[in-house]
Length: 95
Image (cartoon, rainbow, N blue to C red; front, side, top):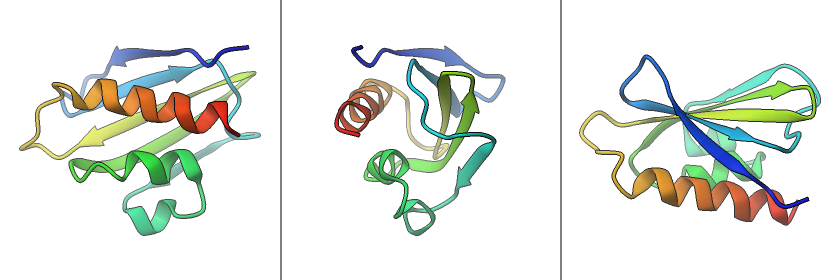
C-alpha cells in the first residue's frame, strides 16, 4: 500500500500534524527535541535535517500514526510542510 500523508493544522500556529496510513510505533508516543534525540528513529532524524524544525512528536494509533512537527517561530511553513511530507513518505516507503 502506498504511503499517504495528510496534513492538519493544530491550535499551535508553529505545529502541523502529519497523518500517516502506516504504523510507526507499536504503542504510545515518542517526543524528540533535537537531532541527537532522533538519531535512532529514522523518520524523526530525517525531519530534523531541516534546521527550522524545533521538535517532532510521534503518536501510535491503531494501524496508523501521526507525526506533529513544530517549527522554529522565525520560520514560515511555506515549502517546509511539503518537504517534510515528502521526507516522511520516502523514509516510510523504505522501512
